[in-house]
Length: 163
Image 1 (cartoon, rainbow, N blue to C red):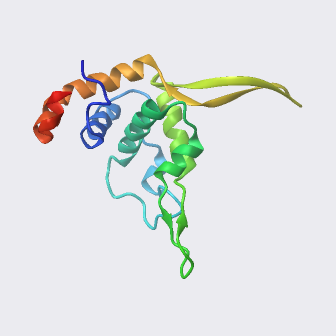
Image 2: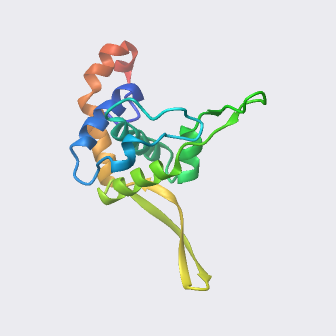
């Protein structure tokens, strides 16, 4: 059986984005047409389905590296911050975009939070989380889309047929 590890990201993410655009609960917010994807960016994205592509990419990243948090994902999706005459520094992506995508994936049942421990605070006990990981339904979705794109991957990369 083909898993999502066997298919290159450039084939898997667009197919997954097409599927997520038809999934109930995952939709682009009203503000997604005006927002930049990070402070280091100069303009908003030009693709019409950029929200679904980013959400699909986040789902794949959570599946590969989970449990993973919003800050780690923001650093991954960030770019290079232009500091004028000073040397460039790493820039982070918009945490609001990543958090909203993860919340939508969580509502769809594809991602879940990983609890670590409870801490006493002024309001009572507070649950802390280690990040998010993929659920069995999310893993099944990724594997089914990877299996559907196996032939295209074999045509594009003939050496993959060995695996």
